[in-house]
Length: 134
Image (tube, rainbow, N blue to C red; front, side, top):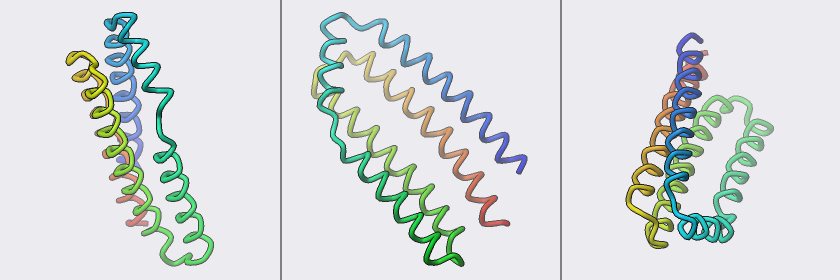
């Protein structure tokens, strides 16, 4: 349980660092670039939200129907969340690149998302190990 607590603290610290990087990179954008970013956000697909909800639905269904495999299903959901998050980040990066955002913003975006995903990987690995050990 100590490993999970340490991983949770590391995740929160990495989230704050990523937020600072993202804020700094947004401040460096011109008004035109910020307008492009808003246009991109308005056209965001709902696919990622639907996939995430489907994953949670499968997890709840497995908890209800197959209680003996619930720990494995929980670890599977954690892995699925991490895969969905990394795929969504890569997709967003591609859309930003195609939209012509500055390379400094793209680099900061990728660094911030990578920090968040690294923290999530650390936390999910600790949770998965704890769940399977109990």
